[in-house]
Length: 502
Ligand code: KIV
Ligand code: ZN
Image (tube, rainbow, N blue to C red; front, side, top):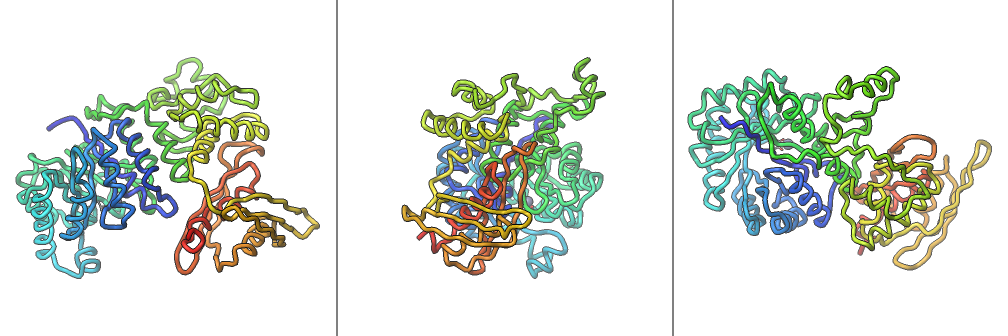
């Protein structure tokens, strides 16, 4: 058995299914290129039949990327497979990822079918895909809860039909690591022809066991892991690329499995995905969290200074965390900013650098020290497209004994509109003032405020979910003034409403 693990990245497909994380095609190409630089073997670029946007992204990523295999997801349905093959037409190396549910739940309650019929549909989908592309991966959805004997029958049949990779997803994140490892072992030992194909894991994190299950799969013979950057994905997410890769690197003596990942690119890729998807990385996230290499207690600091390995099992530089000795403040010049951007892996042209520098100076006036997370945000703002509705002016009066009142001016496609409104707090007053101008029945469903770094001078991030005519829209805003951030997030969501964009 080969001791090389293929890294199959599904940030742009499974990861992108997260509400509020949708990217446009240009942003997806940027992520795909970063994944190529990172050294992933396969990029799952989308689910082409699901929307024209997904189709276009798969086409454009196929053109933009050279080395990785580009993969498109399908159901076990001919039309899906035809559309995926069409979307992949420009890919230098292409793969169709087709499959069907194999658990009792999926067979009976989702597909309203029976085991024999599902097996037939699985084989038919692989045979049909095989007519269009050489490389066909089959997924047995909910394999984690599927009966091992039946699963083995399906896997053997799809291998016979021409599958090159067989994916065993723990779709609901239900398995214990020992169970998942045993499932892979069972397939290795009981499926004829399995030595001719690659076994893949695809573990979800509903019970926090995605990485453990993936490693258990690898220890029992899986040689492809399906992962996402920062572990983003449906519900509690997928397996984190960075965790799997760094476990294999740090515990190489025990596991003896290698990947092609350039680990020094991990931190940059993590921050790029977090910035573009407006999905903060939790501070204590393994490998890429802000605190992953921060030692705060005196005993730990002392221990690390005496010998780094007293408390560090990984060298931060191995994942691209370059603790810079240059503090970025209001006195820092363009060169210092440009140097830090390069360290973080952002390549900006002169115009964007100027824009980021302008915003950097404004922020540095309000905040003593600019941290890497702040810079990632500024880059995100500078590269986002111009919005139709913009905040032109905002003034809020609030206090313990005052009625919170907001006065606002919006610029809508070049025309200015003013409103003043009160509310039960300053944010409510400001949102009410916006609503007066836009005259739409928009319902605010969710509102999340977070501080990004630390201190009362911090940049606040606001995520918003609104409902309009039974559709859900997400918005994001970031500012040192939390009321401005809230209004920016609300406007970001409003800019996505079809009636306003038209
Ligand atoms: O979780 C899952 O089972 C999937 C499949 C479509 C591969 O995402
Ligand atoms: Zn999945």
